[in-house]
Length: 382
Ligand code: PMP
Ligand code: GLN
Image: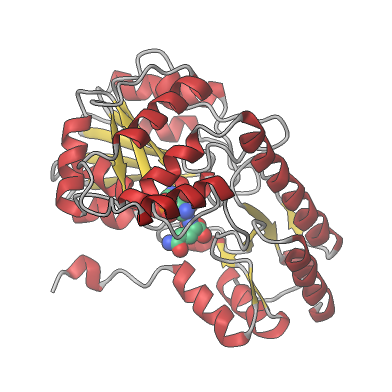
């Protein structure tokens, strides 16, 4: 059997969700909303399902969705994208990430990854026979260590994978940081795979800047979005990649090998979503910001050291002030069992030794009553 897969553990999200079910805990671990996505999007998908258009759609996506992705690129970022040649629809951002890595990496190529990292990045880079070069951001500031990033690039660098807004850090890369990354990518003739699934989930006036919009980067970036995050429909698994016509054909071939197509009715629903008016997109971030504030204030009041979260579904909290003697894995298991609230250990987003091990990630994409109940349970436990 494949040694890399045999040595890959079950994802921490599945492990912690199962533990939450086992203990009847409120699951603030795995990042999924407990509320529905927008009604017009769901209705459009349901209608498309009943319309009898249920056979294989075009390989790169239904035309309505590719056009909606191109229109969203123009509307939100001023990017001019050809919907026929520069958009590929995939079964979730998860597939999109693998397809983009497949599209550019050859065995032996180096790929720069930034810790904390989402759990699929490292195993997929390794499965492709490429060599990961890790650069570490650490809490509480999650600052980009520029000298280390520069040192991670070399003659064998083929790509960097950048996640902004960042899970679990809640970091939104600044224009200056992105310019630094863009300069390295261009100087090394590399590509950038941009995991931007939280693009519309930014707070406090922070806004997401796609690396693709920086000078000289349009031909080098693969920009990944997710309907799961943008429309609070994580089970749908519809992702979309925007990439220059010089890269998109290889991405389409990777998609052809991985899944070939993505359910057409879901694509038609997402096409309706991407052209919803500004009030939808503004409402999404406003609502989530209020949830972040609710959870962050409650955790702070309990004594946690809550870090700033400028984007995503997550707040990260230092539990040392509570006097817990143990690492983050022990802490997250303990509160699941004893307080009946589940969180994710931040060390799960790091590879190897010396990872930060006293932070827990809490998802706030939940109903207010659920957040309040979780806080009440933690208060009773403490
Ligand atoms: N990237 C990041 C950073 C994520 O947090 C997630 C999980 N939502 C994904 C990719 C995967 O997205 P999808 O559910 O669309 O596959
Ligand atoms: N992206 C979600 C998270 O970070 C979960 C995705 C998954 O369960 N694989 O919590």
